[in-house]
Length: 332
Image (cartoon, rainbow, N blue to C red; front, side):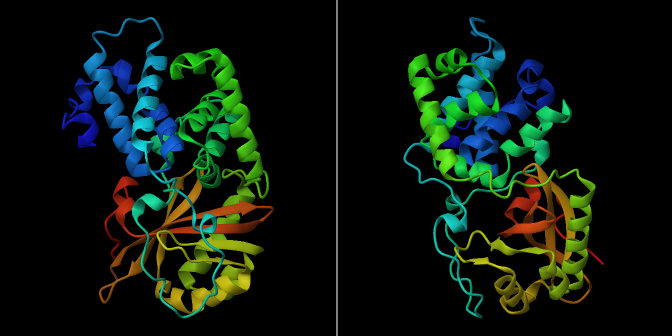
């Protein structure tokens, strides 16, 4: 973010004005929904804090501190989104492919994909159960990917109005727009999201015991590399994606064939649970030679609905492990 902040760094957290620090997590949630990237969210929140830190003495108090911070964060995100292609998931880009023995090919650049994020960075630690459910839904991977189809200002309007429940006048003031233009943008944004059919396959409550039991069976089957049992947990039309590669698979048969073919390198893997995108995910470590050491390989996000796993996104690569606070390797 040197291009935005000019190389300025914040003081240590202990020295940062607590009035700013108390808003960090909710600002991160807002920036993540806008940007679709865990790494860019870190940059955006850092830049927001730098600008707020610089301007705090001159803050006039004509609006609340929270509104002022959201205005700064919105401007930071809009600056970062200028001239960029939208982030996506593989099924947004190409038709599903066959589970052949061919290599995955060359990965696309990192900016092509929506990235997962740890719940601790974007969701409130506690709160009303109904509000927590809405918050989890609003960082669901499919929802964040759908948001990326909106132009940036429409995206901001929809998040402010429908996720954060700001009024039209509050949103208009933040964006420097009229109430009429905000309402018009909201209508267009809602229509676009409706076309994405986000109500289909709505996920189960990640705290539901049945959900947890299903994922426990998934972990056991994956670590045994019992592909037959693993496939039996999938919905008939389950989807598997593997960013940063375009190839994705649909259906139990193709996913099973992939696991027994190109995916057989996952044999012997170990999975650690992680709380990601409002649900339960897993960090996969693959064996790396003699001695029993396992190295980071992917962050897995299963989606569950109607008692079956309807999709699994494997974010391949080790870059996210540090951001998730995960160990660099696992020993025997």
